[in-house]
Length: 138
Image (tube, rainbow, N blue to C red; front, side, top):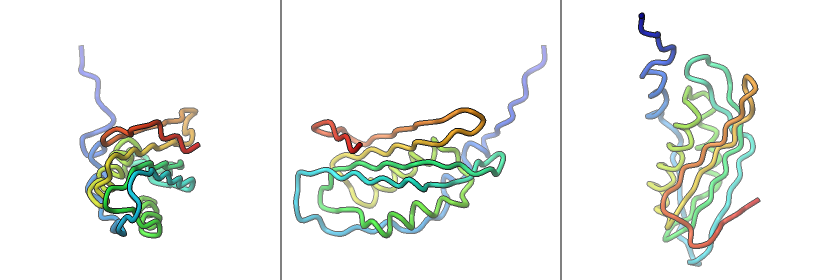
């Protein structure tokens, strides 16, 4: 029996993980104890294998500690993925990692809701910490 050849390589899996993206900026929070929900419905990236575009909505929820995300820099950061070949699962986890590193929130969640390609839609969620209450922004 011959071994099945994999069509996706480790190179595909790691594609874009360390891509250079615009810097996330923050400003000092003045009011503790609230949550923020940001929705970016015009997200685009590129499949690392086919080069075809992926379209979706990114939803970011977090509770600021000392820092709040500055939304213009967030928009530029998210638009930075437009030409990056990266799997959607890695995108969601990278966004969460970068938000936690920049703003150091009490908790954060990032969800990517990606449009159908080949008849399959994907929803991916990554979390850091846990909210005290259900934070439902929709």
